[in-house]
Image (cartoon, rainbow, N blue to C red; front, side, top):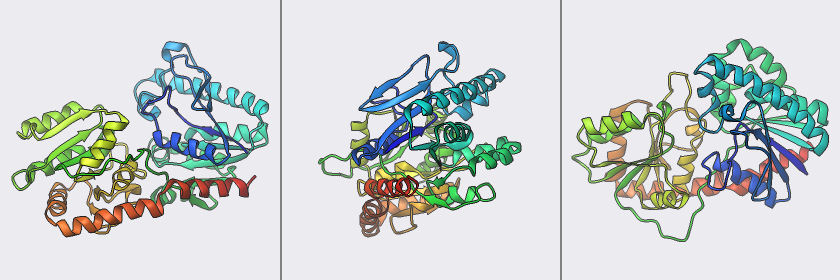
Length: 389
């Protein structure tokens, strides 16, 4: 079976940090005999590639130096800054439409699978029309929230195109609910899982609380730093903020102003091996997500799954798709978003109550093994593919 994944961005080289879970999904589909290729945009002139056996068809949409609409940051963030980026988006859509029509006529894919359907459903409908292919559309949350809050006038036309899909999936119940009144057919829930590969090194607890992710507003890291400050005299742990992004300097300033910069560490972006080591050595992970100014929040929270795969309980905000993963006092603790006092109490509770910690740690690993393991996810997707073959 030949399947084409249509995505906003894809790794440009081995070790590129872009959507590692998507690479995992493709590799595991290929291991089970599904011939997956990728259709995505160029980056500074980068064209066709083949990485680890996966063919990557990159379409050019402007002069080389301007092809930065994707990859470095989300396209939505880029478009919000200046008319020239809106012009680039139009060029992107026109060039992508022409490129996918040519590609599906030549390659004869059986399924075209659109990831982040806004605005890529345009490519999907064209592929279905000119390639006589089945059309799958998968939602991750951010794209539908961006459409509703920023471009609501396009909701109607988008709905007409989207409902031409043969199958629609979402990564969480929360994302599926956001599709109400837009999708007029069943939405299948197919999440993704951890992209971190475990090794045989035994887990330890070195007294570290960790956050992993891009340092942007919706991650709510400032509330974590403030919560840590509230209980700094009661615990001996360090707080390690792993990742980079536009809010990093402001977060470092908050830690410095609170006088805890010696216990709040910012290692920046780390390698896969280093990240694995942090997961093994941490006490637990905290994801203090909030709704940002654009109304965006966590669609699922893959870092929660990564930590839990190492038998680490988690603390997270009760928002978005997080509640599909974290069950309060079963495999972690849930707190109201942006509530510093509640977050501080949860951190202290997880550190002080050793027996509850051990129970939640076991349940965390069990959750990943039973509900979010890759074999189950991949087999569910293959079943859908074969139903519409």
